[in-house]
Amino acid sequence: MINENKIREVCSSNRERGFKMLMDSFQVPIYNYIRRLVVSHEDAEDVLQEVFIRVFRHIDQFREESSLSTWIYRIATNESLRLLNNRKDEGVVSAEDVREELMGKLKASDYIDYENELAVKFQEAILSLPEKQRLVFNLRYYDELEYEEIARVLDSKVDTLKVNYHYAKEKIKEYILNR
Image (cartoon, rainbow, N blue to C red; front, side):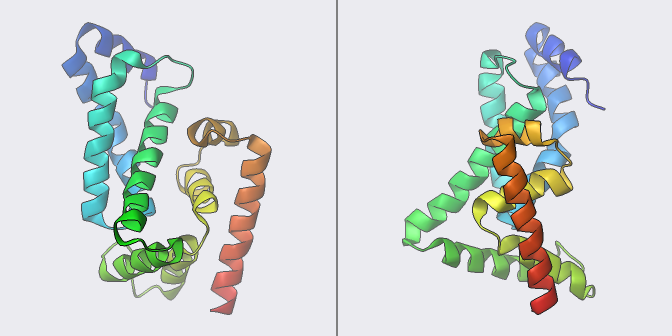
């Protein structure tokens, strides 16, 4: 398990060494989270780089109102959504068009095993969810965050997140069974 107190302590005495510890601890889980949101490896790498640039620049301003991981997940969420929203803004495309683009990227990547039809349907089902449900589902299902932590990441109420997660599961089940 990541010792966030140790990372913060080292960051305050030796910023570069502390940041390296932070990167070693968070780079893989944050990359995986971002990749599930933006699908493309190249986009995920770009967003990950931006996330850690922001973390490095603002680590001194971290107020410890949440855990370090919550703070980093929140930055990763915001940066991922910024990339997806820029796509909408650039081409004046709808959320549906962005979803279709993500589906296309999913099919063009080696992200999943295309021999496993259920895995493909599962990923397509997740991408078909509305943004909020997709975020909640990914954080809960893959990252195994508690609802309280997800609430801090997404700045939302726990009860609302539980409802979003429930609807997401139902929509995924419906997608898999009926497509």
